Image (cartoon, rainbow, N blue to C red; front, side):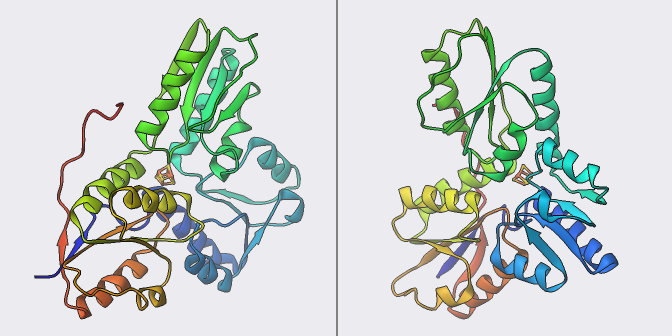
Amino acid sequence: MKKLIVAKNTGFCFGVRRTVQTAENLLKKYGVLYSIGDIVHNPAVMRDLESKGLRVVKSAQEVSEGPFIVRSHGIGRYTMDNLKKKGVEIYDATCPFLKKIHSLIKKLDRKKYLIIIVGDENHPEVIAIKEYGNNVCIVQAAGSFTFHNQYSKAAVIGQTTLSFNDYFKTARSIINNTDFEKIVLYNTICRITDERQDESVAISKIADMVFVLGGKNSSNTTKLYKNCLRFNKNTWHIESIKELKDISLKGIQSVGLLSGTSTPDGFIYAVKKYMHKKGYREVQYNGQRRSGKTS
Ligand code: SF4
């Protein structure tokens, strides 16, 4: 029997679903809506929202009127202040997990910690959270570090979409290579993306081929894809149905199916339907989470 092994966690995560839903509601009400950057890293979803009136701009300077939506990644506090000063009507759809990190950074800043963010300095989430403290620096997961030695204590915070392993590896390296009197580690990794990383490893080990569904501009989908590729060379990052048509399924008995957190259910459904027509029966992956995540 040919199988389509579907991950337990697919489709929008809670934060993205909430933001897209808010945008849909606002567009219905006002017919126009502004956002800085794409509110979701998925071209098809963005095309749909733009056709309903969403206007994506690059900075607060380009927004002179509202309504304005803050996307799930959040925006920096200076950008927020700038919009407020202009009297723009703001709807904050920042993911609550990110809001908690913003408050944490403000608190640590008041307590005079050097705040070290492990993550990608170009990712909108990191660009935003950096603005919530005055003493913040960013290190890439595999980077090297030099910190100003006027700080006696440091707090290490991870970008929510990192894997636990990458975060702890970098945190351990910070502990081993610096001489702060005190270092506090905060587990800010989003459980939802971490679970998907776990599933990606397990599924890519058991399937003949793997499809990772989501935008090519989505960082968490790309991470999933790269993760699967480590264990299964026959892994494909699929953004549109037409890409599937070029993939030969000859001799393939099992295909794993995963998605990023910005991939809409409609697209996942369309891929499943395509695979059903090719004779693959859907089974849900039901494995256990791995333990011992810090090694
Ligand atoms: S991945 Fe996690 S932190 Fe990011 S938007 Fe989704 S729920 Fe929020």
